[in-house]
Image (tube, rainbow, N blue to C red; front, side, top):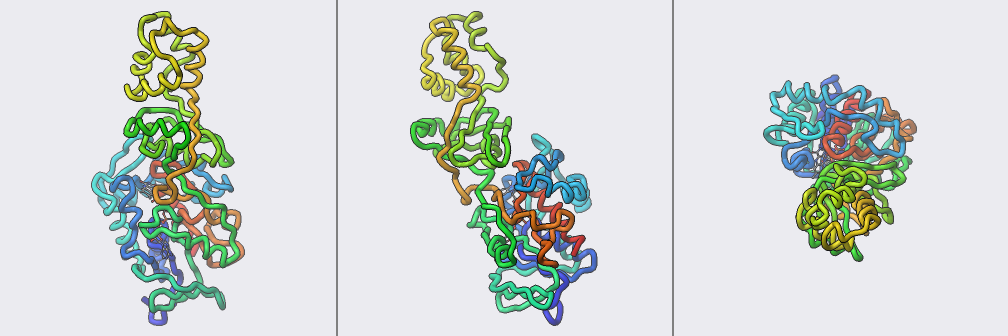
Length: 397
Ligand SMILES: Cc1cc2nc3c(=O)[nH]c(=O)nc-3n(C[C@H](O)[C@H](O)[C@H](O)COP(=O)(O)OP(=O)(O)OC[C@H]3O[C@@H](n4cnc5c(N)ncnc54)[C@H](O)[C@@H]3O)c2cc1C
């Protein structure tokens, strides 16, 4: 702490982005303070990736992010890459492994990533203070003044790194949006993303399949573009989950369908071919060759195709094929912020410099990480955005 409580930068939020930004600026010789209301830093990192933190994805590219401003993330992502973060991870002796789809995880524990970030902060002489609520933030005489707990501190730079409201029980809040509005920045309507979807109406019948998982292609079309993902889908007691559904949920808007291809491996005409080759096989048995038994039975019932293949008309089989390839679910909602891995939307990036994350109209004010309207796919992309945006701001301060 400086004697007068004056720093070069104050970072609000000791999460992924805040800690990395503070460490970057601190190691450039800046005096940096990080403030967080939670009792310890990096709580979301600790629960991420099932406790092993999927800290980046080797396939990181701007088209794997949703934002009202599609080009915004490009600059920061290109200047701090997954390979850069991996170099840091390895320099701290953290063992890692690649799982599916380019996802890099700690071999040991997510705790190692928090420890690494704290060690980087210590190396930069950063002060990290947890456990006190931020009571007031003001801007006067080219300085940002922050009151938290019983202290008052000032700095010419303020970094908003308080994330989004997903998982409120971890200390997540919409604080960043209130602060943005206070400084005249717009907020793109936030919404839960990477979140399970719920089924109602007739589709509640699918809840009976709770626990059944299968690989599908899930598709939806919304204002944020077309989402199409080939991964596992899982039926739950409330509706649909699993990676394919979480991914597609970020693109889904209320009232739209999510289409599921239950048998992505099967080519056109496969049911008619099966009828010619094995006329006495039941439709259910043929479906169960590519799907879990309970799901095959449920789909068969809904298709109204009981009995042997030979008993079905070619027309009925073609119609069934088409339905199985684009089974339309109409989710009636999502499980909300309580279950959403991230918040899509957020502080409008059109007011920010894509090079430095600084608000053009408020010199010295920076917005990084999930607080900004940039949302990655599932699989390490959100942490990579946190690191890249933090780095851009940390070097600019
Ligand atoms: C269960 C779960 C698993 C996840 N797994 C992964 C994964 O494996 N890979 C991946 O890439 N992404 C994952 N994510 C998403 C990832 O955790 C976030 O995108 C990332 O943490 C965002 O970083 P951030 O620094 O912007 O925000 P956060 O890490 O959320 O940090 C924000 C910080 O601000 C603090 N804060 C909030 N409000 C206030 C306030 N009013 N006053 C003071 N402090 C405040 C919070 O306490 C927190 O410490 C996961 C998310 C969840 C919920």
